[in-house]
Image (cartoon, rainbow over all chains, first blue to last red; front, side, top):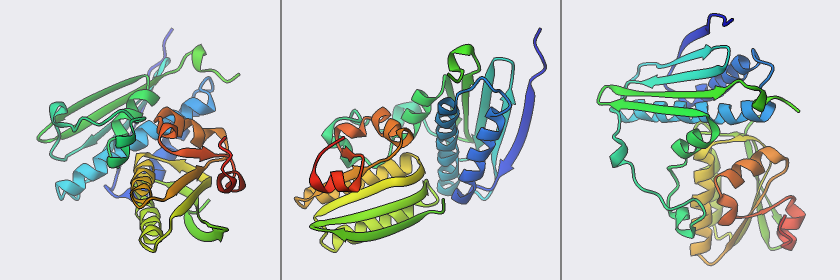
Length: 149
Length: 114
């Protein structure tokens, strides 16, 4: 039997000082499921924080003073976050191709690790972007594989 | 722990010690102190992150930018991490392949990599 998902919707001002609050919310939501290991929670915290950082930057570039929308959903088998901004959006084929992280020339690029971190620290990432904004969906599985040892 | 940056000399090394969380909110202060040190002529730099609770891509970008500038000037830059979390993140992003990582300031200044 499955239970209804628990959902939280909130908004934060598009300012960097609210990032630590978002990370606290991830930890709070993750603690509702005791099967998640501390490492997995820490990983997901980084992923959601990176998505929120990108959203704050998108609003700064677009000179928008609106809030960033964040939705958290806890289901029986997954913890999900949607981070939505109202920036100008971006197109995947316009993202600068970066050298591999271990290439010495990588030091020439101080940016570009955010999406990489989201992808390796989450079980699922979807990015929908257009001229009216970007929505990033991040999820981790709540399964026995993630349990504390 | 609250964010902070301090600088101290350790023999021929300048040691930049960072505490707290490094993210988009605090990275500008970290970058400013690091660049000031480099533009002031620091050649051998240790960045001690053992008191850092959290670092994101913005903070890692500051490290990369600092490393590039120090090496361009013929200097050396070394990282110190304590605890598995930060080391894991640096390993995951494979920055340990381009930055030397140590487990203590004394190891970094003596040159024995972790």
